[in-house]
Length: 281
Ligand SMILES: *[C@@H]1O[C@H](CO)[C@@H](O)[C@H](O)[C@H]1NC(C)=O
Image (cartoon, rainbow, N blue to C red; front, top):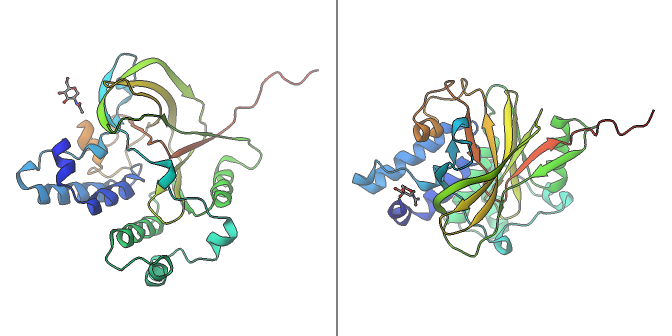
């Protein structure tokens, strides 16, 4: 598996990250990437890229369960920064403006950065699947506006993300589930995934079908501790049969809930539960 990573070009890796950002719905692209990798690797084609090792089923969610999981490493110092809404809104965010945008950011047309930008724009422009609402937020304000429009303007919002503090460079290893598996009440949920772009862009989406949100304590073979956020999609019957999660888990659409872990800089928004019994009579 590690070997696969060495062979894979940076372009494919970024492309995989981009398509992974919407693994809730766009299995097709991911399978395409996997076959592209397979073609590049010739006889290694049976190996799956470690980046897709984030999926599991509800019955794996028990204390003591051991599984191989990929948590990409991010350097916060190098992560794209949020732009103020006014500034972000003054720049086009559209693939037909790509040549203009490349000039603006001084990227040459065939650079890896140009490819990443193009992929992000395309992903943001793609149609949502049935029962899904999606939006690419180019500022913190627009992410909150979208989230509030889904969760309700009267709800207080709560955001959760995976905590993974480590000095190790290991991104793929076996982890064991520790004592705490906490379910977060999520009558509605918006998931926001970071996208490769010169400034912070989040791909946010919400699905009508039921989800469960969990915080799971994990410990890696090297001692790394991760407080991981995971979402389980209870109804997968509308997903394309080629969805990468079905390949990883060796199941078919609609037969089992599909769960996945969230990388550290992605967000899960839920309405804050109302406090009960706090009002006096
Ligand atoms: C996880 O453990 C299994 C069984 O011990 C081993 O075969 C596999 O290579 C390990 N995976 C990783 C990513 O270390």
